[in-house]
Length: 393
Image 1 (tube, rainbow, N blue to C red):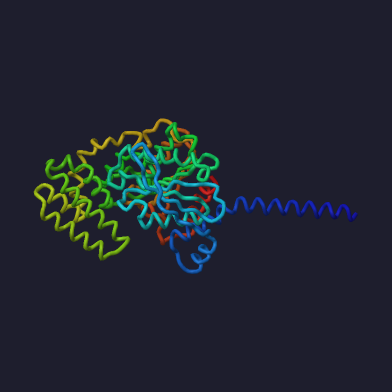
Image 2 (image 1 turned 45 degrees about the horizontal axis):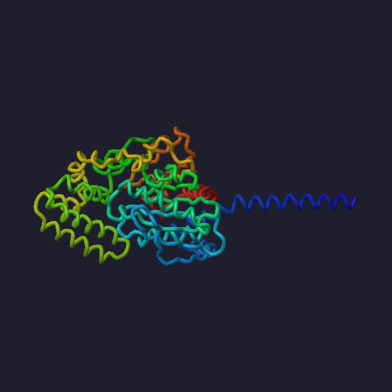
């Protein structure tokens, strides 16, 4: 009898140990995701204090150079304490500050605190306000470079997290034969499927109608970027450089609002003064930019959008015939005014028709490429679930 009891006790203990192990395996990614989201959202209070306690210490390494077909590109590693199973390539969107951009550095640190190595690398063309096939090539080359380093890719695979327009470009890059078998996953954070469709939205305010989603007026930042790229088509050749300098000054001022409002306001004032010195039609166009008059600037640019080559699969992943074999995560703010959420809704259906393994979340907790403080519990749980899947991949 005593032997039977011991066997029963051993069986119960064995089952309990297995249950605990299963819970730890299944639940750990959710705990990591919850901690990451609380820290990324900056919720404050006891929740953020607890999340900070759970986060791993992170070492931010000095800049290093990544070799690409267009030359070396600066990057920076964020390395968590302890063992990290996965390294992700974190690529920002259109921003001149590149890997020094405050939101990007915070996101990289939060991701590394969740237990993944992060290599932040800006795309030179996007830093210069240009969306080109070269940018997609650089992502491909960076993944190739990372996959050859055992300290970054012990299993030969890396993840990619692309922010804003880099999200779509990352999905295009991951579909390429050279790296298809080197990408563990791609997370497109506020990204695009069809660049031309997004450009039409930014210049006209028109987006495809998707049930449950509202179309909002486009943000002025996007149309200013388009003017920068199309300047040589809308003003005489001898005005292009000066107009682009004015637009660049306005865009820098917009970026500085995250750093110092005094610096931002001074730079906005400089852009207004630059407009006064320009000849027509550049003066009027830069004035539209300074006045954030999307309704006036958009119609000037819309007829020239076909010159951007947006049906190139390197720029618009929806034109890729065979999408990436890696898991694809599409995360988008439902009220995004730079790349509308309808873009991800439509793109995800296209990916599914082509057989891609895709996970989609349109969230009220997300603004364009960042976490919003306003939330509901269901929004939070959905976001935790998505990131938990990412951390398991």
